[in-house]
Length: 339
Image 1 (cartoon, rainbow, N blue to C red):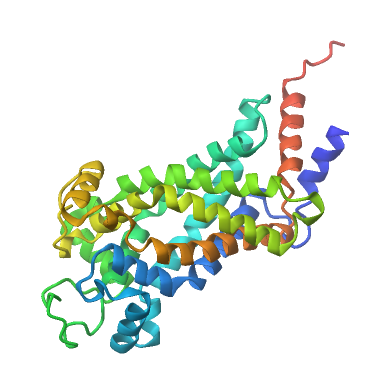
Image 2 (image 1 turned 60 degrees about the horizontal axis):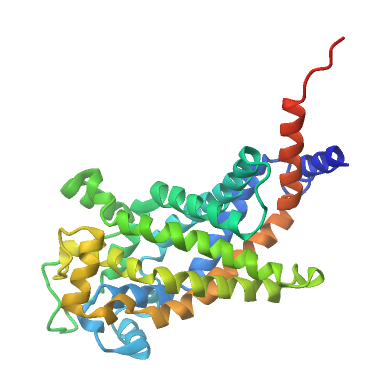
């Protein structure tokens, strides 16, 4: 029975996946999921970054006021400033994140055959996968933040606190070259420490809550789009609330080169303390309400598209691959019968 199931898991990729290796199909599913989810919430992401980094023109303007300011100074395309870099980052990030999660999950099962296959396993695999994805794609996140921080036409619009001398980037490649020329490789990884501190718990908790919520959904409804959207929404909401302050520290560290923020030159936890002392503890949750509006559809869409892409690409279920892994391990370690 086990051998038959393992064989089904190995061969079920034929069809839409074109016989591609399992890891490649998981990369494709994750990349598409990330790109679709990120583009859907790009306007909210832009405003959130401007709030987090205390851009002068947006202090106290609120969500509607911020949308109005962006529209007046940059037009409709302003809502998507930095989204090219964002998608360029999120596609490989999401692809690596989801694929690494599946791979780490299988490796843990292979290394510890008696481990309980439940939400705790997803917490462990998701945390390590999140760290792996951040390390591989962080420079693109930094570039996305710097491009989103810029407000085209802000100087000519007459904002008093805007600095005419601040660095203006022409695009993704110009941003990369300028940062590398000024600070080298170290500059491309500025602010990565709080990203890692935040992604380990957030990524793990996101997968944990998603699988935990799905376990409470009746079996006959687990494949329903509404059920997946609901589970993904709750997972993103809970995960972001717990780790959000580290995201604020990360953003302020990323734009410190042209910001008057007090976190310039400080470490992650020292910056956290300084933000509380000089900007108030509320700043640690600046933009959180917008983030709720962003995270709910983003994580929900991401998980839903990922699961749908897995079905389309004929990626076997986790239960099938787990059985296949254990079956292969038993066959490799079984003693060779003597002649």
